[in-house]
Length: 64
Image 1 (cartoon, rainbow, N blue to C red):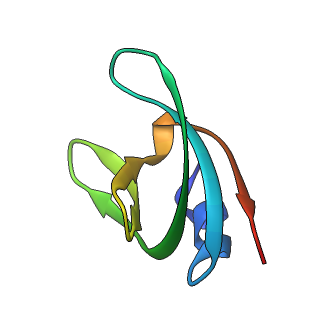
Image 2: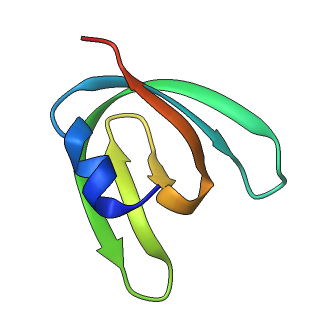
């Protein structure tokens, strides 16, 4: 997922499926507060539960 695509979900409640650093799939429901770029790490989805790196996101869908 790229930053411009992730910005479409700002301010919305979303279900995000992503892989952790061990390759295991996780699904979380979160409110997306911000999408930011961290040098040397890349894009990051900032939610109310956790921050998720965009290169690990496999799917995202808005609940509203």
